[in-house]
Length: 248
Image (cartoon, rainbow, N blue to C red; front, side, top):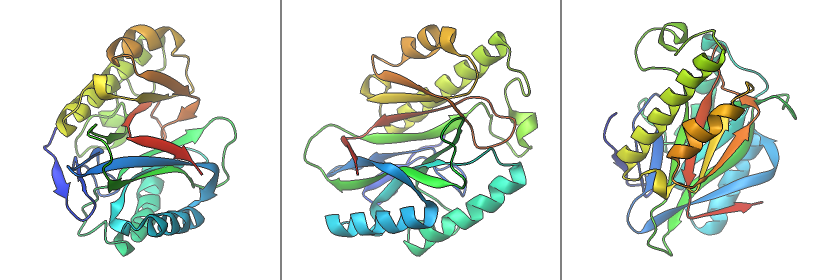
């Protein structure tokens, strides 16, 4: 796991990852992270326009945009995911956040089994504001059971194509470990987590206690019936420790 990089224009630090997102963000001293969930998710163009208006109303620059949560209609092929992300980062580039292939913004993008959108939508977003408390705040990006490396997803995925109880256990253990590494890199631990989200359409009921809740330090665990964004992936998680969360 790499070390954090400070994005001074946004008031946060991030874990470098790939061009489409970072692995997580945390507020720098003097700032804190606030999360907004949209009461009605918006198509991306409308969602980004909402973000712009919201940040302007708070007197914050567009570079304060630190994380977002998307919902998509169905998992993408690897090429389809690349194509989608190339379009997605165009707005971040216009905002002065994405530059030269470097993206500090954390992201979760999953595909709900029910109430499925017809196109990718903005579900929630996070940004920095001037701090009013001393508690640190962070957002760990969504991560699935995929190891790093240059190969395609199939070669890097834990127990690719398998969904037995033991295969799911291995996937869950890997992703829980990944979340712990990201928390540590950002300067936090499970004790600092406010909420932990698990995303899968497979039955992980017997795994939530011993494999997830036992590690989360008492933070709530929410299981979403949703698929990761790429075909062939079965389990994803993210972790939040925002200073406050609101619904608009």
